[in-house]
Image (cartoon, rainbow, N blue to C red):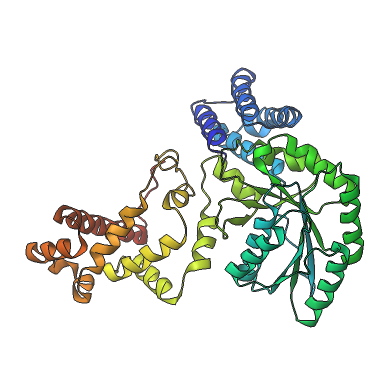
Length: 434
């Protein structure tokens, strides 16, 4: 997501670093490039106009003109304005009641039913909550079956009463949830157009019955600026508490994310970043802004790791931090990395990823499997003492893993380089290459 916009903005930021001072003349050139980058990313014209005006005004201010490093202050101004555009502070999901009721609404095809499953999984894994999915899409063929299948896959209960009136279903679901100590109810409503009066009236009836703590609109980010009309239409009828943007991992320019809050005052609370059931993330405006500007998202990386790491992995990670680890520890960490998802997505979260050429890197998942096979072909003693791996042992390992001796040597060399790198980190001698 935001790859093209990020590339353009990073280019603009690098250009400003070459200026000794900020002047009316050079700031006009830079803001013109900023404007083009945002417009090409499908950001609303009015939003772009206000963004550029704010950046220019602050960049020509007294504080910047008297600064020893005006370029750094300019970059901070751009980042701060991006954060503001994306919504400023993170808006949390309501969690303060024994039973929290969430209504999810949206157009047909926006990914609403799948998103409900993803959100329920996030609530259970990250917040240790007990969610109940409620099937109220009684119009779309197989919608109830789809939700039941998702519930079965995630081992999360689904409440359904077939093709009954949704108003009756939610009334009974609330009672059932209270009797069975659920923390969250997630109501899957039927997809509809915001101009469909009859179905919008049904949503309002459900709203009156359940008195939801959150009404979340699921929006396909690939609909572009038309998403603003959809959000405005639903918000006028239902008073939304937030939006969930899906398919931000697809071929989307991302402009809608930069326009939503400013134009509708509806905060983005979650974004869909992959098709997998764990592919829903809470939306942090500051983290997103730093990622767009190639400043990385280390907090996001840490949170991902914390969610999947077990005691063995944490212990081996501590050893790696000290530079005191073996191939057994390396194998443990390799298995954890696989759980994080595609490695190239993780590399993009590193500060300076674009500058180091990591943003476009493609990693074949088979390469990691080959490394794993090589290590598993070693004896426990060899993994703990890789220095004993001479020619005959390497030939045996290569044969056992179905790889070549050259690949075994390459792995051992990379392992030694990693140990050296970790020791440099520990001693404070390592500098990022940007």
